[in-house]
Length: 255
Image (cartoon, rainbow, N blue to C red; front, side, top):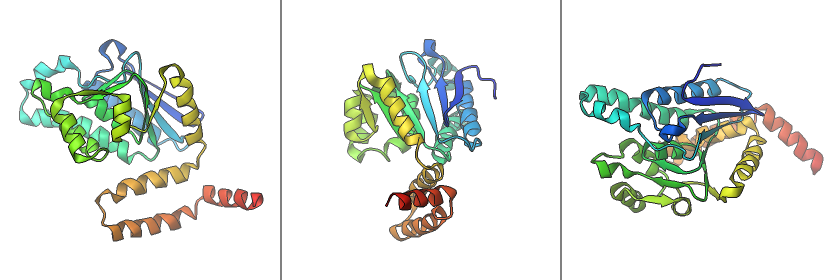
């Protein structure tokens, strides 16, 4: 097991739990934490016993975005240095999309800027009723650039544009209404509701979950005909898995 300084990693009942652990900094992202999240994802991707990954933040907030302490230095860095720094977070988002297991983000408190991007880069987002989401980068003359690629795939164009240029922080209910997140649970019941949701998802076929995630995102850049062709291949592949054979056997016994 890797030695992490800024996150917690554990595995229980087929679920890898990755918890950002900088509560005093509202789990702000610096280069080290981004690297540790990537390492945790790589570790969980290599563990065939896992069904899914749960991503959370310690303390009151999920993630407040970039660590403000690093911003003065970044403003003095060269273009090449800034590209390398930005690429670390961009590569993390790509790794989340390519991860072979579903990633579920559980959001309490604030998920802002890069932290909002991190939450919504997950395949499923579960939020407490009091959670808040937003991209306030424009208020400091910055551009919510990489997170835009995620938001643009989740909400209609005009909603995305308004969120990005206004810097407005919205409540979980509004994020749910526009399609940024999947579920909102009452604060008092959040822990138990998340546990029930995760337990139900983890009970599904591991191979079916993995193939479904891979195929869905593969279709992003495909034409209708190409998407159907990819679906045909995955359909045939799924029929060869042990999970499928067990599932069919159990279904026939019940019928």
